[in-house]
Image (cartoon, rainbow, N blue to C red; front, top):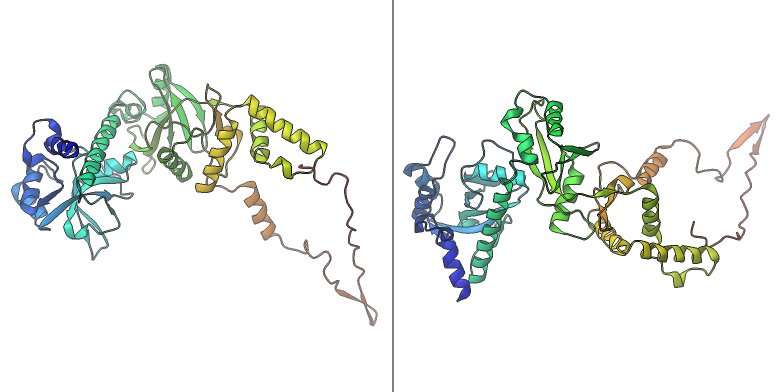
Length: 414
């Protein structure tokens, strides 16, 4: 009974006193969909839909179902949508082209993609609900509740997208930036108290006394985007706290065509670590999982075990960091474990801030260079070629192979 009451509250236009024709019901006939499109004030490229356009869309199918639709990485478009992200788009599967035809809501999709959303509520023909891009077809009371709560969560997320007018988004998209260079905009930002915390090959980190976050602004950086989206969906104690997913923003200051789009992500303020701390963390990363009972009993291994114990006492969160490091290594890989990409909270926890990049690890570089070498570097003990002296062929003397000897320091971990 409680679930049905929740559904009634959610389908009565969010409790805002709206008419039934604007309610998001779980299924609609073609006539009901046409009336809904008109009642919600849907727009096309020219302006508000008229009765003919709404009817043309609705006649694509007799029955329509409310679903969660995967929207993919579509092209970023302007202007922004007039409808909220909570208003379902209308789409149908084009069998001939092998893609979804967006009948209503293209700009909503663009805004959602820019915000990092991968799914939107959608009305699709009943015949298309078996497609791989469709999730949560509403068939039960529980699934109705699930999709309603999910739509409400999108609404809260959408509100957060527009609540940063005085923050980093407002800074990058302000109409006052037109005709100015990036350096001029940042100079004015710093004059107002803004701070540039750091700059890397792919992005810059900013903050301001009025912000409760730091903002990383970067151009296309696929590994970092992958890490942020992974961390946002799989929060761990040793990941940064991201306050939203990366958003694609079109800046208003002067930039060459193709460079006027950047990504922005808001995250917590972290502190850099010094080289000595990183070396201790790196030491524990190598030896923190060692089974000491299986190692030789000598002074070196005893000192190694003692140092690991001391590090666990000095850094109480280091074992959790190692757990999260291995979790990341297993799921998306880590190839950029450096001092600049490990930071620390004020409470002492270590944080993996940016552990992936597009380049090679030192091991990959070594393997590639080794494969590219040309010569006889690996045939020192191969069969020696013959050389001629007069009329006789003599075999070249082979270099002696070293004899296997037992070293006194066998079992040393270094």
